[in-house]
Length: 189
Image (tube, rainbow, N blue to C red; front, side, top):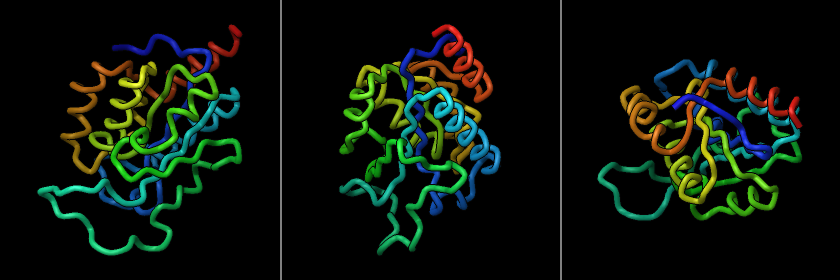
């Protein structure tokens, strides 16, 4: 579905753009993803809209077929990348699951600010971003996905989410289209 509109109070959610993850092998150039996510964060702040910066520290409990890394994470692994230019007014969320809403206060933080729509970017398209989008949709938020500001270690997972999952959860568009809608929306207010 094409991007149509942004609600008056839309928040940006940036998923897992942190030191321990951005250096991993990914399907798309990390510099492009970081540049676009940073541009969106700057645009949201310029329009005085909420920015939520999410990092991951650990994992949900339970058995999986794939082994998980054992032992403590390296120093600095959870630190958000400096390009995001974290500001005191940003919402900071640390998650221990794939999605940013499960077992965090993200939903209440957004609702307390009157947010009705979220734009989601980050890593990994098929896990952290998709799970966050699913949870946002299930919580009743309008969901928008900036597909050129996300990536995944697996190109097939990235492509599958964009083609088959995201159209069922909301609207997708480019970073530039979202920035233009922000400007149009602000001009109308």
